[in-house]
Image (cartoon, rainbow, N blue to C red; front, top):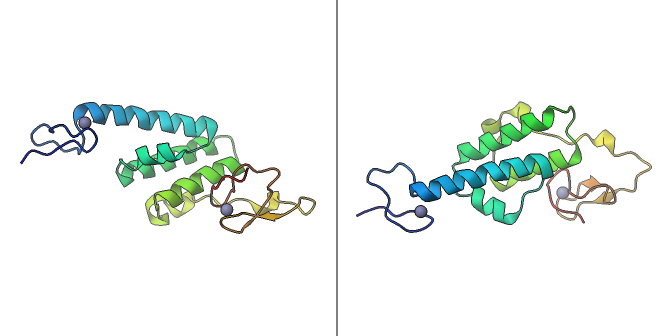
Length: 145
Ligand SMILES: [Zn+2]
Ligand SMILES: [Zn+2]
């Protein structure tokens, strides 16, 4: 029995190591690079992008996480957007501390939330967040506005 491409359903070349045909494989790689570039610039991850990333091996997602971690770290502290997107990737793809390294887990610096700010709870994880300032929850990555 010939294996079929998991994306387009065409027959795979004999002894193919990938579950995708060369054409879909190349297309997926391109999409992956584009998602990575978008994450660095816009710090947003759409459901469609998550669906695309789900077609990749977990090792690729770990690489993506670590690449983003390093590029976000270049400008110093992680801001709320950067914490939010890293925590979202970690959560959506079930990345464990063992896989990404415990020193690569981002924790949002709660001292950034000062008393004069009105504290509101995140609608999803119930952690205190500044709804007026934050577009995304820095803890779980859910969109607040
Ligand atoms: Zn295909
Ligand atoms: Zn939250």
